[in-house]
Amino acid sequence: MTQIAKLREAKGMTQAELARAIDSDVSTVRNLEKNRSGVQAILRTIKLCQALDCNVEDLIMMVDLDAIAESY
Image (cartoon, rainbow, N blue to C red; front, side, top):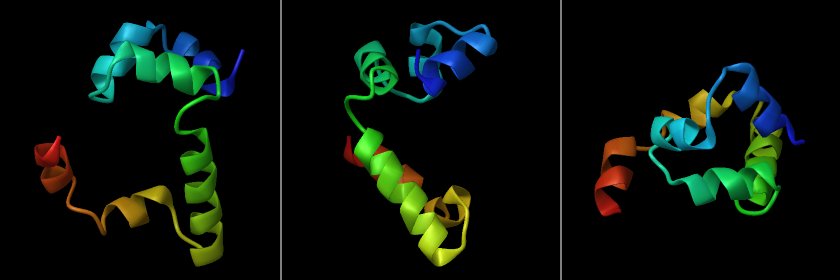
């Protein structure tokens, strides 16, 4: 079981509930939990934060999330 699945289950959430919480679909959650999609991007983000000595939130603040959401 991956860390994402453990954390989700510890919160008492289903995959569907987590998918709704992150504005995604269940297949995305399944893929993340199986270390398929997005894991490399997450690892790159962690390395980026380490290199820049910042938090993920610091990177996200640089991006207009509403503009990104509208593009989908």
